[in-house]
Image (tube, rainbow, N blue to C red):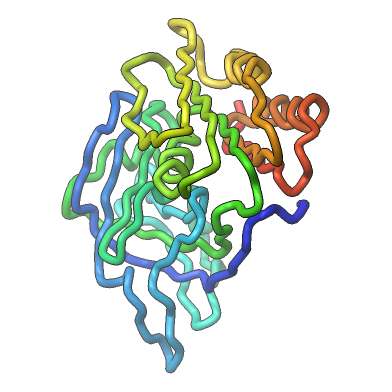
Length: 267
């Protein structure tokens, strides 16, 4: 993986038992859980200090541990001073990657796409305030990109937590062009849009499943490309991410250290 124009930090993996304090449907297609608890703070273990929760990057990933369909509590890794031990008898801990949408010293928000399948999404549909939640990470964080003149971002619903956080953390100056694909106007979100930022919402045809159209690729191709050094970021369905990466590399000559593309999921 090429080095990006982002300062990378590593962190000890810490398992945190938190409480769901709020549940909100941001849109019909996105559910937000707010988690809080003493485990967000620094604590001691066997004479060592486990650090407080930190998420320096707008697209950081944490693990959310969810129970199996027939269980009330997830199988959890064991905490050690230097990280987590996933050696368990029987079922391995099931952790799914999610980007913290909002982080404060006292709580964090996690957004779940309401797509009707998957253990983590199913768990998010069932939890209520007062229920417990277990997370770990992030173990790697990447700070905001530096030494760039403009940003282009693209993604589907799964990228919205990172895109929303990016726009809130975007420093004054560089323009940003953002393209987001969702199922329809009902799933557009209120995002922070300062001067120099434009957000284009793409709506899939009625009945079209995520990852089955070329909406994102077509819209990215049609963008008026900014001048200077452009940092290009995309996340979403793996095939769509691959096609956008190819376009940016071959047609826009984006430098490797400014080409930040991730396949979050696969059809």
